[in-house]
Amino acid sequence: MRIIAGEYGGRILRTVDNPSVRPATDRVRESLFNILNNRIRIAGAKVLDLFAGSGSVGIEALSRGAERAVFVEQAYPAVRVIEENLRMLGESASRRAEVIRGNAFRYIKESIESFDLVFVDPPYALKHSEMLPILLVEHERIARNGIMVMEHTKKFSFPSSPKYIIDDQRVFGMTVVSFILPTRMDKEL
Image 1 (cartoon, rainbow, N blue to C red):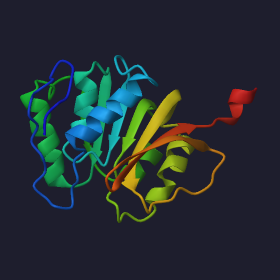
Image 2 (image 1 turned 90 degrees about the vertical axis):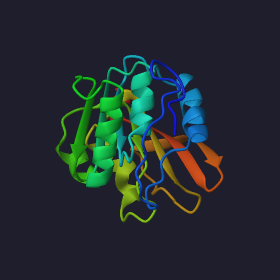
Image 3 (image 1 turned 135 degrees about the vertical axis):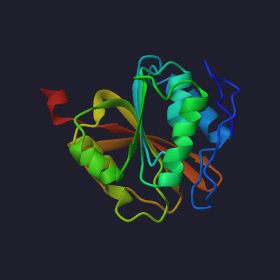
């Protein structure tokens, strides 16, 4: 897996050696960032990479000039891979990258930080993953003009909620990438 563009473009990243971890492919990441370039300014953005796996999406954002990326991952082997990838790029001691080993749901509830871009790639069989967009909006983890991107299967369905809208969806084989915008009641005031 390689970094597509930016400061670290072309560099090869380590991946997690576990068949249950699905790193975002180069094709999906390239398409994702091409779409995002028309919606949000990555340079200077704060990025949250939930269920980060190898950290490829957050690292891609850092390579493209993101101000900060927070990687949340529960599996220790994946955390080690993220840390090794950041170290290889010289980002391990930087204030731009933070790796948190922990539960994503707990992080959403306990953090006080909001992000311009939230990327969510939960295990497909994860219970309650359909609640992630609602939780992210309720706990204000998505900044006012931010966007959430969630990777999921074609069978996945989001619950109806006035808290967010699904702005766009793109299909890549068996993977669907949904672009989700928070709706805030105070926008109307």
